[in-house]
Length: 369
Ligand SMILES: Cc1cc2nc3c(=O)[nH]c(=O)nc-3n(C[C@H](O)[C@H](O)[C@H](O)COP(=O)(O)OP(=O)(O)OC[C@H]3O[C@@H](n4cnc5c(N)ncnc54)[C@H](O)[C@@H]3O)c2cc1C
Image (cartoon, helix red, strand yellow):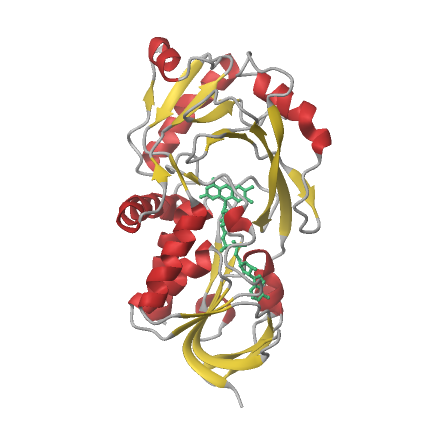
């Protein structure tokens, strides 16, 4: 006989935990079901940990809307909950005339999206902010920042649990079925069980499509394709050449990598873009020349030995389009016809920034159903 609860959240990454908190705060009985033996083992701990400002997303897209709200929510939540973060600002760095022509377009797009604090910097100010940077023209985003993603997940989980949510680890969801006005979820692992719920939120990241396809009653045609794109990082071994986020332009250049300091000040380069058909977090050291060449474009003082291999993440995409063009895909009853089920697909960047706003959006869909 199935156990019952009001709301099941599948996946304890940042999205599932933000949804669990939101639903628990709204008074729902919530159980979070996670396949791994701890939270945040996948994309949520394998990213750049940048709080995006909302510059280059397609106007009117979910990303464009949720990133502004998500950023605002994070900057409110983090200080209250002791989550490490820093509003360090981002320099969009044109390296030549071609790059410089891109900057006014970025500024105009940001303004269309409601972000009106971008400013062009005088060269003297850039040299003061980043003495090691080679640049042609710089557009500055003061509201971009960095965050400790694991501390964020712990804080979201803590508040969810304080409001009655329960977390089941080592509990892979195998599939399920639509029953009456709810969903039954089959859970494997040592304590295999079936849970019947009124609301089910599929926030399984890289596993979202597989789970949706295994729920009997979800029309297969509504499950989008999954496209994986691996990104690896290299890290500055001992030097700390930059203290701001740095986005070199032209951004689509084959050699483009971004710079991000972490909360402790270590400087990371990446991610690059590697199409793949499986999840694999190994870091191939043979990419070192690529990273040195890319970094040398804007960090002329880089020396051999300055970079060491870092880590890798896999972007859960629904198409090959780059992140600013490929929107989040959020399916509720209006798409798949199943009362109470929300499937979240393609939650790639800026999903971390948007996490709390995605949770608000999902809660709104559930309440409206
Ligand atoms: C290289 C890279 C860089 C990025 N940089 C940024 C950035 O700087 N800023 C930003 O805002 N965003 C960034 N992102 C995006 C951001 O990291 C993601 O949008 C976000 O972490 C997605 O969280 P999630 O909870 O959906 O996925 P995940 O963190 O992957 O969580 C999904 C969870 O579901 C669980 N799961 C899967 N299958 C099952 C199953 N069958 N049963 C039970 N549980 C299951 C997994 O174990 C996992 O814990 C980046 C992403 C990548 C890949």
